[in-house]
Length: 123
Image (cartoon, rainbow, N blue to C red; front, side, top):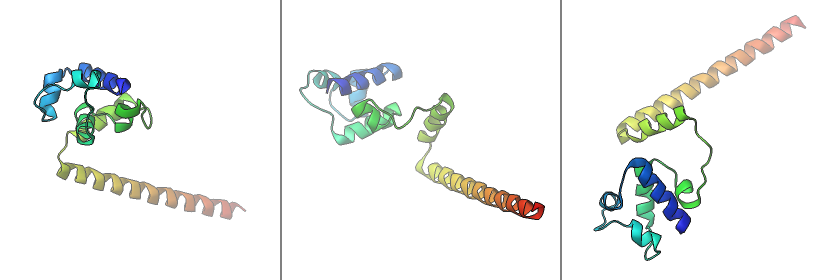
């Protein structure tokens, strides 16, 4: 638990959120950091999920100190922007990404077919 507490405490410092403010954001009556540090209580699953949103980190990171992959600064910036969008806007982004991936796949397929035809004509 001390590792979890350390990561939460570090994220609070990075974001400038004190224990009382974190408590307010988690809908608690008081700041939870001291109780978590002294192992008097533990964050609930809902609180962990909310902290992931607040700090823009993964649950893997908060719980285990690991991430799925290291993100570049540009990827982190894009992720932060994405997180701040409404769910409606996120749906638009998903549709746009799906469109771009489909289009990219079609272009690759056409290129591959034309390349194969060129090789066949040479033979």
